[in-house]
Image (cartoon, rainbow over all chains, first blue to last red; front, side, top):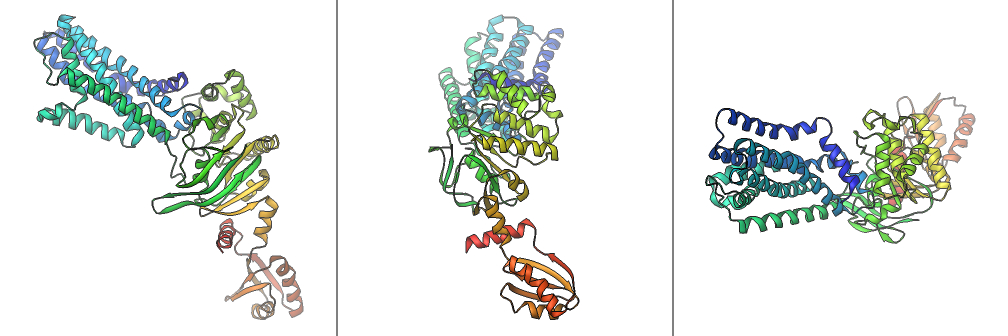
Length: 238
Length: 305
């Protein structure tokens, strides 16, 4: 970890208008929870549906994409990354720092609002709020790593990330059962299911697969991102 | 400290950007001169550890530069692209560089670097409000903050006004005199002449010439020159000039002569002499290929021969 790299990355992501991108979805989630509470939709079944369809399968991957690619891709695009990389700091440390920044952003802008929204609806009943918050955080860690790697290896990180999150995880994952096993958000849901005791919620991926998968994907993606940064090349200026 | 390039080539697919370059950059100021697209940036990126050579080696005092972040203790890099965080102030930008280097007194180092480039007054303004020249200077300050032994600058004078340019030239000359190893790239001969003790010329990816500016100037002066001449009797003048060995070739145009002079100095005395002897009045003599591109193309043909 490098505090200067982290500081610059936070400022780049939270400064000015960019923070609005990170705030929009969590505010929408909490707004929906408040509306459901007002109009008597505050039962466990509705809460679980809101958490599954919005918090963890729409908001989390999109925020993961904004935070994961946002910590590095814009700097690579405009060349400012040279400022960090022309210093005696190992490139894997730069990658790790950027990853940690993305994870903390997801904890604040995804996991925490997920807890708050569920709590508004059902309080701490059957650990639904805690389950989805921890599940979001665990999946958020993996999303941060994968999207950081995408931001390092391709200039089309956002497009590819959206295709993965929306087409593979949401569309294909909903239609083909087998695809669900290879979906970060389903791994997060497996953890949520383990913590929550609600009868309205059952994950279709086992915890014994989800946890190792999250760990392997996260570590592999961060390591590979560090390796790719070591071989970062400046080309085509002439 | 010295940077050594040994048989360095870099290609992108089938395109060769740098072709078998061997050179040593030692203490003092070296200018990397070449037209746009000659491969100067590619070569500089390889020296700075931001590009792997396809072939050959680039070392700093014997250590490979590629994939070696330790070299940045000794290297300061001023890239051509802006590469400055617009949301930081000049002070924050230079201070962050000092901290990234892990200096013991980063504030003092940042203050000193900003003073060196005369950017103390606007240091608390955000970089995005700076002019191009100011951004350039703040980049130089960030590159100098750890007092590196080697400084690499890619087209550092671009976008600077004349006063800032002179100031940076003085700064570079001073650091070179103090024993630092400095390399800067430029496509403007006059710029390089004024600052560099040593010049490396790169043309079409090849190392076309090397020497101090007097040697490079001589090389450029002694090359064949093309002149356009208008006179009272072009045909008579052509017939007289062609008899001398310093005249390479003559083309008779409807209203002028195009003369290729193989030996510049001899031709310069020959022309008025012949004109006087033949009774021809000279109306106009103008160099037809004084642009840098033709100088470079001469050098590349010469180095390829």
